[in-house]
Every structure is written in structure tokens, then in C-alpha cells.
Image (cartoon, rainbow, N blue to C red; front, side, top):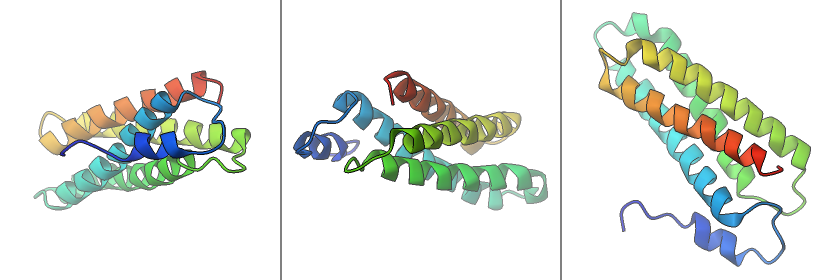
Length: 137
């Protein structure tokens, strides 16, 4: 089914206790992973624009955010021997990357729909990181 992920079913099969609500964790993983994909698509769309030189900062931040989101989602999916301090630092880095990317994409949102969509997704992912950190990670 479109829109369905295996994140929650996989977390439900995890044999050991997880220190955070599994549903909240699954939601955060899915939002952060989706943000990474959105940022990648936005960077590619920016490269296709006529005035691409004006989008250089946006492209760089898109790609940085995409990389940070991908790593963050992968780290959140692993729990065996996870270090809470490292996870928290990664979530903070992800929130910062998402905020920076959203701020830059917002500058171009009126002219480029892909930047508007990306900015919205980055704001959702930043909030997902913050929400997860508030749940004692």
C-alpha cells in the first residue's frame, strides 16, 4: 500500500525493551527518512532550474540535510547497545540541519514549489527530532 512503511512492524518485533514509545519512534523515523528523500529531490530540482547559481546554498543545505536525515533514521532504527548521548547528539544535529535547510528553502518557496514542499518537510522533521528528544532520549 502507498504510504505504508515497515518501520512500526519492525520495531514491534524487537526482542528487547526500547526506552521510548515505539509508535513515537516509528513516526519520527518515517518523517526523518522522508525528509531526507525530499531534500534529495529538492536539490535535484534546484539543479534543473534556469538560475541554478542562485540556488547553490539551497542545494548544499538540501544535500547536507538529506545526509544527516538518512544517518539519523538509520541510527534510530538500531537499538542493540545504543548510546543515548550519541543518539541525542545526532537528533540535535538533525534538527539543526533541518532548520537550516527549511530556512533557506523558505527564501525560494514563492518561486519554486519544490523548495516550499522541502521547507515544510524539514520543519516537520525538525519537530520530530525535538519531540523524540523530549521523550527522554
